[in-house]
Amino acid sequence: MGPPLRRQRQGMIRPETDLGVSVGKMRLKNPIATASGCSGYGLELAEFFDLGLLGAITTKSITLAPREGHPPPRIAETRAGMLNAIGLANVGLEKFLAEKLPALAKYDVPVIVNVAGSTRDEYLAVARALDQAKGVAAVELNVSCPNVKEGGIEFGIDPKTLVGLVEAVRREVSRATLIVKLSPNVTDIAETARAAVDGGAEALSLINTLRGLAIDPWKGRPVLTNVTGGLSGPAVKPVALYMVRRVWEKVAGPKGIPILGLGGIQFIEDVIEFMRAGATAVEVGTASFINPETAPKLVESLREALGRLGCGSPRDLVGALQV
Ligand SMILES: Cc1cc2nc3c(=O)[nH]c(=O)nc-3n(C[C@H](O)[C@H](O)[C@H](O)COP(=O)(O)O)c2cc1C
View (cartoon, helix red, strand yellow):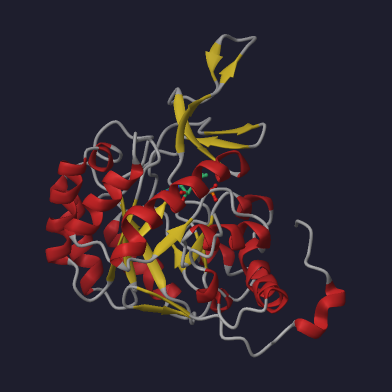
């Protein structure tokens, strides 16, 4: 793990600091969540720590039918991150509801279920079933997956298509909080953010992966079977921070919509930077592959960091950037 905040400042630590934040109708006990696709259905992390330590966990994308995903290799390490083209491999809605969701109910943690689809009807059917299922705190619409041929990113790039999809999903989702996860593969993310909010998103999460390519120079072939993949990890952090700031200034801040920020978060400094850019909470993705305990360690460090900054709540940091 990265540079820990100095222990000699322990005098400033306030163990009683309330780390709670609100995201739509969800009340999170702290602003640290996991990111979709980087820790399976969440249960995979339970052998390392108590999931109840986290603000929320996010499942991998769930589709109506089970999906095998792309054939391997579907992950490639890059100099400052990783490229993936998993292709939305998952057990499908029915098995998720029957097996994964009940197992998650044992933990005192809100569950954000990420949803993907190839057609609008598929999104609607999955979202409807999840809204009716006990134990789903939020539906996070993945309209930004760069690794599938149909659907996925196509829904998240054109603001008109996006607003239509979100409006339709909104009619199906009333109990759970509706989060829309935005793609960075656009000219101006404020436009898709606005479309998502106009359609009825109660929160926005950003960013998904940036489209990329890895080539084996000696074999003269792409490293991934899918040819292209999505870039994540430290390499994307400055892009993600910029986009969180842009969305916060143009859409989320003025409209009072919370942002879940993600992209390369590994150290407590990253969390503080994302919150200062405008995120109310964050999601930890690729860093969980380096150490599955990254997210709970960030919760611990956040308390210490807030004391050091003299903040009574993480909410004090949201958007706090002197320009
Ligand atoms: C292996 C892998 C699988 C992913 N699967 C999904 C997914 O199923 N749905 C989704 O919305 N995002 C998925 N993502 C994107 C992450 O949730 C996140 O948006 C992105 O990786 C940036 O955050 P990070 O740099 O902290 O990983 C995946 C990322 C990785 C690395």
